[in-house]
Length: 501
Ligand SMILES: [Zn+2]
Figure 1 (cartoon, rainbow, N blue to C red):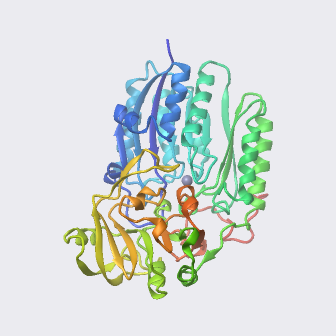
Figure 2: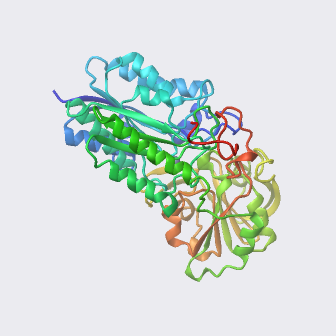
């Protein structure tokens, strides 16, 4: 009899400082696909589910896929959305309980529902209540997971991405699947331990393209070749989710008999994260400094790509901050583009017009003007109207179709602003090219993203710079009102120390 494995994906990174809730409709707008339709969409692309299926094919499993649910990072997940999606996974576990051998989940690790702090720990607890204490459960996590004690108690196997930009989803899905299969065959008896570091997040957010942090991930991979060490995961944490257990963690999944070595590895890596806490690779420019560079930039080798770091929708920022756009207009830095501006009101207004119309309106800055600037009164021309659907062709979104909802390109003083209705981080060149914005024709291109944009945009950029406009995901942590994180914590409290943790 082949092993019968239940798979599922429930992925959300929750920014607890963001107003409102992430609703079931937000998941529907992004990804809420059941069973075979999820396999059809994600089974052949760079997604954990594809890796699960790779492992399953190699091992001859029978796979029952429950649901793939993702929503763009945003406010806490509503109880209705959480219970619905967790309920789909739990109902499948209950239905197949008699024949099930193991469970394999794709999770983020930083999901915060409206009613508790630990979305993943709660899901695993609900599943354990159905399948009992012994069934092997393996889960993949994002590199920005905030792993709680409940998560390592409930899942025997946890494996996180080792790349940021994240490009190894399928690979770690396969790794988790192979470990689950080895467990079912009786070849290993895994458990996972966790060492936590008292920081809001790791200083380079886990960037694997800078020497300050790349060595950590290389060493984690090297440790996985040691006897009895099955997976070593370095989670940078997510500084926009204020929960008691927040912060970076090192996880080691180990075979029975290897706990003391696992603990040694995890503690040594965690100490290196702590020791590197001040070494930030990014230089954060003000909007005026970034705009001055854009105005003076020679685009012969490609445009100046400016990361609007603090307003990254991928970190749950609103994506409608205007401070950098205002500075670029004042500096007369055109020709350029600004992508995206998440403003469904303006997208709807522009869609009541036609291409070529001139319109005056209030753009952006509506969600929380205290973070990144208020609305700008602007006159411009509509140069493109679209339903917002695009299919990626880069390392992260290649072959995956998403939608920004009603979308328009609004040209203001030579700057093409990509106005969208649904939130989305800039990950792929098709997110601009589909809407008629060609980077090669520009002096500068603003992308609302912290780091993921580098996978697709760095190769076409003349130069990349990073701007902190003071929006919700600003690296200036003291601007956010933390209330729950266990204190002392670095960098808010200078007396924080790893030894005391
Ligand atoms: Zn991440």
